[in-house]
Image 1 (cartoon, rainbow, N blue to C red):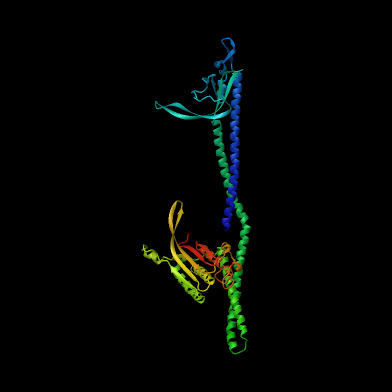
Image 2 (image 1 turned 180 degrees about the vertical axis):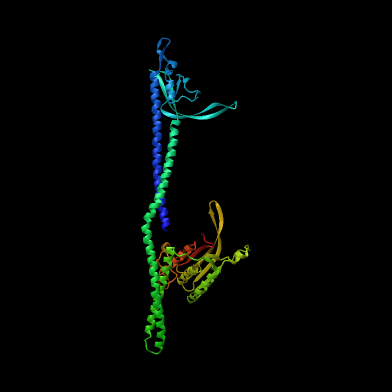
Length: 480
């Protein structure tokens, strides 16, 4: 229980930290990426301004109203500087015809007037010679571009397009993603380790307190058993002596009745202490149970025979149905062990006795209690594989007073008993205890502990005034 709580705490620490780190890393990445893009756009706009100032504008045929750009004179001095900064220039005529470019091959991109910067992807064909064989391969080229229209007055002299390689953004971005992923992974791993350590430290005082409480319960139950046994023994001896003294007329007969009441109360107290001791030992997990093959059919026959006396006394029909194996099953060894499970004989006896006696206790006269045992195959899936797991299905159906719907979720709580005001019969108001013994409220808690100890499941279905069905599923073999 404490290991599961510690594991959940560590997982929560790690999950919350991982989400925060992921949000932080995403914010850093988006900020750095946007900063890189803004830096490239600023560089492109600066280049546009510099080139515009260095353009050589000439008059056309001595007509001062018409001008043109001297391309050779204008771009001769800017080529080396642009290449050093990994920037390419293109000059287009007013009719959008490419006149000059620093690219080895034309981009063949339509001219798109844009002064804020845009990202374009160009697929270019490059000649490659391998072993004197010519072949063509395509390589994508991603660029960040700014296009500026150059004009004098209302006359458009041409268009200047400035391009910057996009890898100036992608390369540091990839490196940043790798660094952030590595740092986040190491941080999450460190938080998981520290979370596991800190959750263990936080659970230590709770674990110690819980262990002391369980040890106290076990010790108290153990210490109470001896005086209760002595009281019961002395009462029985006194009752025996009373019979002799009573026959001789020395002691009044009502003394015998009082001692019988003390004996019954002592038995109930002893039963309660034994139940508490059993639950304390199960909670501690310190006692290793001894499991061996148990024929459940023989066990149930024995329990039903023991409970038949109570059923006859209350005029209740108690029946046992053992579902036979299918006709197609011919394995003799399997048929001999059809109802055999690996478990603890004494605990299974206690489990079925509690459930059957509980059904008998709260079933009115002329009612029915049916016990059913069958072997089923449950299909399980693990890592994409499917296999059949044999299990035993045990059911106890009664026609008793039933349980209120609001009480069903609490039936396995210790010392819980249904409110008597909610459970009426035609004869009297009956308190339906969730125990198969003397109404201490521990019977079903013990049954659940036994079922869990055998890696099984227990379920209760009930409708008030109709009856109750208790279902127990036990695996034939236990997982190690």
